[in-house]
Length: 111
Length: 114
Image (tube, rainbow over all chains, first blue to last red; front, side):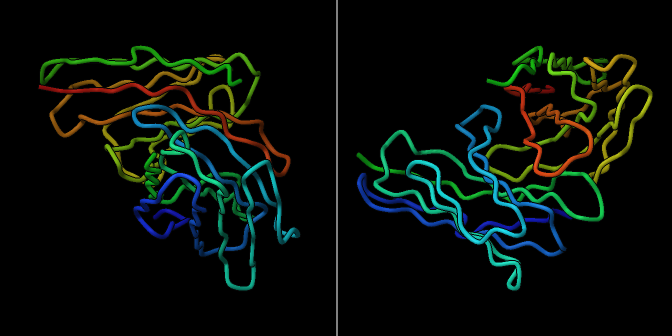
């Protein structure tokens, strides 16, 4: 079974608004990563947060991690139409070295 | 920029045909993966490898097979394709061991079996 589960499944916002996506997971992890996938393409790494970190920033991206709740959130500020894509969280579990992905959040940013 | 390549990008084949999806990476990564993803759906891990001569089955049962004769290549083969195999297949790689290693993806291979 997959490790991460994103919420919501789909999100539609206007350009300039902020988009927040959540991810929940089940087992202890070394780190959690967020990836982006444009339609019909491969996934591209966005940001990684380690299990001992609580928040991380990269440009317009802000990621939080709450290991007690086994959850993470990805915030995209001042969204642009080009941010339209699917966003996946992936966990690197402590008991193995395999990456597990959730079902993704499909973000649509309307111009 | 990821140096991992998949061919073909798009393939339409008839039922019963044998096909091999190629995947190669030039980053020297030991770990390689194959994921299957239907449009708009989650990724399912179907095969992975820790290095040369290592192959493991993933979470999702698959009728495909893989081989890892060289570090750079991780081809996936379907001996007899069926319409249920229609999907996107994503190859990926990362460094073995360590913590927080990014996984790099190819652009994917879209397979349609008619």
